[in-house]
Image 1 (tube, rainbow, N blue to C red):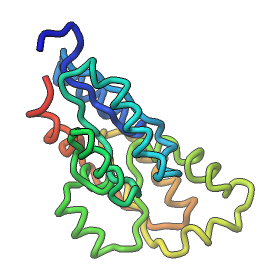
Image 2 (image 1 turned 90 degrees about the vertical axis):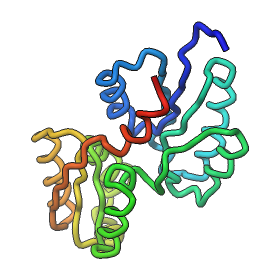
Image 3 (image 1 turned 180 degrees about the vertical axis):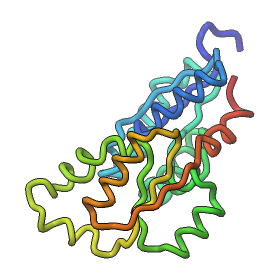
Image 4 (image 1 turned 180 degrees about the horizontal axis):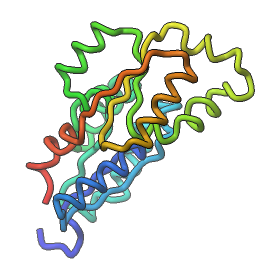
Length: 199
């Protein structure tokens, strides 16, 4: 099909926007666009499949292929069911922690350290808003132990090496009274999925 439009559209979670733009610039994709659904949909995962379907329908005629850069993110398989109906491929993984760390590594870590709270670069950057304010902890500090009493450790899985973000993640661990651990993952999980699928 001959078209003036970019060949591929990535429909992603807003929490992955910066990482995808970094990959796009590095790979010099010339026929790929990125659009995002609001990251706040994680708070209401039941809304994710319909929001994704709407975005697919709005763009299907403009692109040769559409890829979903999204974990299942609590939809209980409903996102995959909808994507199968629409003929759209999704990056593998239940959530972004899994495709950043790699399935086997994440599975082994989660089994060994079940009481772990995870931060990505996005969550470290927006911790105060997404965790402290959106969960109401700023207004009701007594909620903090209710939410986090079952956690023992905060694992910051980092996509870019940034001392400022690492310090923010350390402060987040202190705020939640959790042990801090750092692991640099880079963008390999995203890059591996995209490298043979986009141009």
